[in-house]
Image: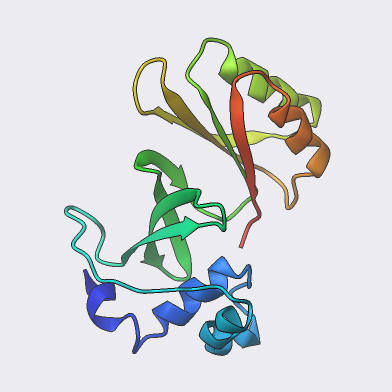
Length: 175
């Protein structure tokens, strides 16, 4: 889409790098994010690819840690500073980034939704958006819960990680 043609000129490469570095949209260091990433030994490459059926302002970000573990996220800029994350590791999600989001990667077994939402309720979190997808019945599933408020706290993360069949818990703060 349009990002393939304009990402350097419009600063999309710097903005995406800044996001990976954890910078907020109003951070004055965004213009220097590529240099900052290099000083932190973070290797970043940009390739243009065709993503059939994707929004014109779509980016696919693949992150690889030092141990070789990867995660692939696809999202798009929908204008006005708003984004939507629509896949994580090819599984559909709908994350706006406007509020705290809890991502729970787990085995697709009965009782997972109840276990996770019970812990969120115990922490007095109001879930206003919920997405669940799986690669296959009985396979791996991703649960995305967007909650009201500004923060989600570490004790909840630890409680969720202790639930049997949970592989990973990721908290995404609002932007």
